View 1: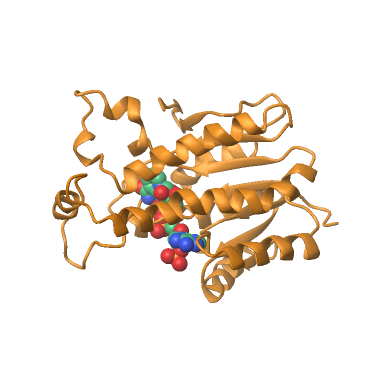
View 2: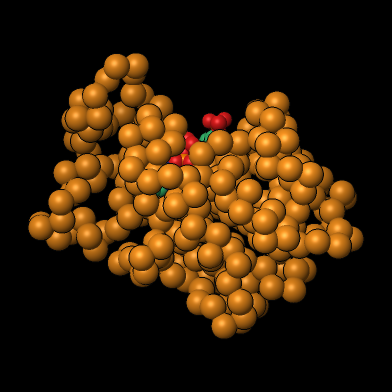
Length: 251
Ligand code: NAP
């Protein structure tokens, strides 16, 4: 068995996931840099350093997920931390289309169900599929942690408040996928009560990445902070929570 604790970060070839990988290496982990394109994962792992290894992992492809789990078992024999970070914001935003136009075209009354399905496939079902495949390894670890990278945009409590300033962007595609991810987080935390495995959801905050065409206001270092804190929780840490780096968020 590998002597260092092992972390898997999905979608770690760029953005916040790549920064989470770097931070976990700094904290003594061997980090598996999940990437749907192996060459991009290899380039990212090289950037992270010798304690990072690329792992081909497309969260929408069951064969890829099963192969990744088998590789972790055969090559490392352990998995201590799973960060479900991979996500997409849309598939239907054409080059040059404004966020407002995309928002209008994805209102609940007119949205393409193919668009809803595609985003849920990655952001929700992909997380559940990776959870199922990695759980046997996580159960064998002394104190496993699971972090689901969510978003405050999915908060039903916030978006139900007429005074909430970002309410207009709550729609059935990306924001609702994060609401569903929050539900999955609670379901996982309830399932794992009493096991010592903690499952929490983190919002990185509006971060400058490819996901939002680099319109975010935070750095990836800032965005990685809360997911990394939750990945490193000690035995007294919580499970089944939703937070950002400023504190708890309403579901
Ligand atoms: P990003 O730079 O676009 O990174 C997303 C990563 O997910 C990429 O590595 C991407 O791979 C990967 N990915 C997408 N589909 C995948 C699949 N089917 N299988 C495996 N990997 C896949 O975005 P980011 O901002 O860092 O996002 C990281 C997380 O933070 C996401 O969960 C996002 O929802 C969340 N978040 C971000 C913000 C923000 O402001 N940026 C705010 C709130 C929450 P490719 O490189 O191959 O596309």
